[in-house]
Image (cartoon, rainbow, N blue to C red; front, side, top):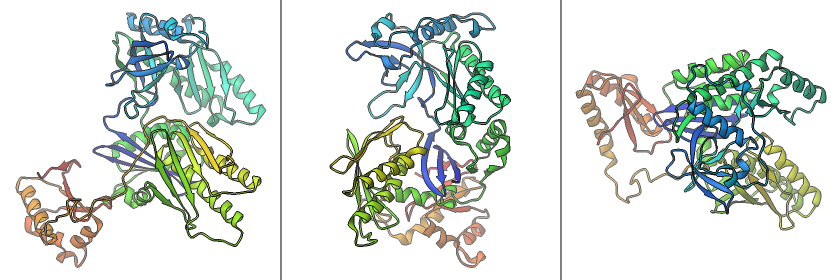
Length: 518
């Protein structure tokens, strides 16, 4: 399997597309003003205890207080509270030597939050789920710092090895190795990526994470809740950290700063993969060049078509997501049972992709085409398990019920990704009335003249591909853009963007910032 990361940087933030064998499987949006991302660490203030829910509301700076349940407190919450207070009040230059920190006894799994959070203290918390709809963030006090090969967990001495490492000898080797090099008062979870790695690589990863913990200690000094203590890495680096392997063969970025940062990051974690990072400096939109815009348009509608002619329909309610599988005009033979099985297997692949792509969470109900044979139902269940094996979100798949329904639960970490694939009428913009298209050319020329007159240089005009063709095709010196460039004595770049409506156009300055014309 070939994996590619295509990264589009614009004024609003960063768009990240993950492709597997040229097919879009994940789409991430990282806004430039993003807050409360999963993994961020905050100093929060307990505002209200809810004994009936065995939970607390914690102020972290969001308009709605964050939610902290007793089960997310961590067995080592007493140690965390003690550490938080000590670090906040620490006046020493060097700070606390964490190896000498005295760990407090664990709390009971069946305890009450009022017994632990009595007095409404300030506490170090980690974002478990981003704010969704009207809900604030969900928090955890089980602090974890993920690296490429290991995850560091403070206040314990437990070493655990990923179950996905199947070799008994390798598991024992990693267990002994980590126990020998890990610092005191830290637990370590060994990730699957650590399989076969040498001591030096694991030690470097561990050292980086302990340095991060020292930074957290330093940032807590004198801090007053609510306050951000540490940000998770950017989406780009966190995806590379979690997914970078032999299958990853290309990372393309259209921003020089992010390109340099990403290249430096890969040089540090995997020098042998440095050459996979490349800069995209072509004038056209990067997502158009790599066919991502088209895939987004085809994948985010209510109806998603399959190659065979079958299709799936995706509906959303407050309680759950419903997916219906339809055979359409697909027909491979007279055997109805076989037809149903093949259609369902094909649909399972696309459904697994859609769950990752849209980041659907909670309860998902799938109505497959009815099959009578139990072995076919098992084949379908196994297929869905296989297709979701690449999904990083925790999930559970139940066997198909007697009504032909498959139930899936999937971890909800952030709001689901919704993209409106319907376009406004390109001529009326939904109003039912239009100005004459004959005047569009005159309108662009007038605005261009105005901008150049007002000393705007290195202008870029972004238009729909059809309008782009009209402005640029033909003999070079006779194209509309060539005539305008000669007329105004200044060259204006023109770029096609298929996400624009037919008559939509925008001007950008040399800093890639849009120039508002009204």
